Amino acid sequence: MTPADLAPAAPPSREPEDLSDGFWVFGYGSLMWNPGFRHQDRRLAELTGYARRFCLWSIHYRGTPEAPGLVLGLDGGREAGSSVSTRGVAFQVGSEDATEALAYLRKRELVSDAYREEWREIQLLCQPDNPVRAARAVTYVVDPLHTQYAGGVSLEAQAEVIAACAGPSGKNCEYLFNTMEQLRSIDVRDAELEQLEAMVRARLAA
Image (cartoon, rainbow, N blue to C red):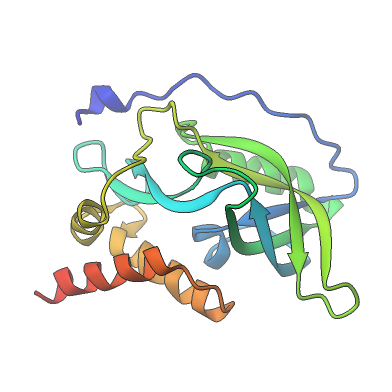
């Protein structure tokens, strides 16, 4: 892969949203442990139709154009559908912070338009007064047509990249370890990512 291969695709279309009542943000990777915006509530949440995977080459944060790292994306490919879901964290942004928060998210997540901004229904979980409640949330899903899409990369290859790469935001392995720590803190199990974590730690210890 060369830097020329990593040129950004055309910007995605975005659905207009009324922010007068604030909005929810669905986080499944670094947003869970480093949201970076003001919020007034944080809840366990689930999004159906997408799987959490290391399926995006990172050239801005956890890698470089010369040595891309790998970061997580919501992948709607392969076995997408109602039987697939991802659990993460939903943040509620108040109306007074909505415009600033959305601008921040777009600057952070759409740096090369490898993610698409989509407004999706999520399920807010573990509320004592209402165990499950639906809400609309902004989500950032990977664009499978973008040149940074890394769908289908084997776990072995992912582990090699994550153990070796780094970028302006730090080591690629730290991104994985921080995500796994956050998933454990909210009692979410992901067998594939747990296997990947073990493989990366073994490479670092070798």
